[in-house]
Image (cartoon, rainbow, N blue to C red; front, side, top):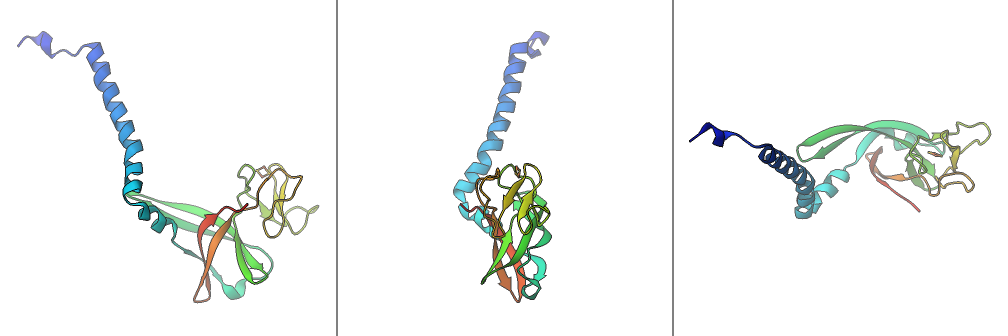
Length: 167
Ligand code: FES
């Protein structure tokens, strides 16, 4: 065999390279979709987990209290920890755990942080405001209420689950 036959032409090199990269990208996109299609319960189970936020039911008042906690995310071989926050409080008979993520463009809201608008959730980015129950205030940028976490009380302690969108 002559040495010439072992050489790879520029065209062949490009073909091999692009086929390899394309195949890798297709596998990256398709395999999680196939896994979820074959086992939809996998995602539900992981997202349905509840996490203790270190507050007891007796600690709760009508005043929203901020809690910061960590959620472990497992997705097949991928594991990660995510920091989350919530405002937890009593609202009549129910316990609310409000997400502090502004529903306008995702900044973090604070409770009772604006002197001109006390007892509201306030977003400093574009002056968005929400009522105590998370309802967006008309005339400010957000167009839907703050999201809420699923809440469970276990042995008197507060556990938070998935975040739910309202409105
Ligand atoms: S991100 Fe909150 S008002 Fe715009």
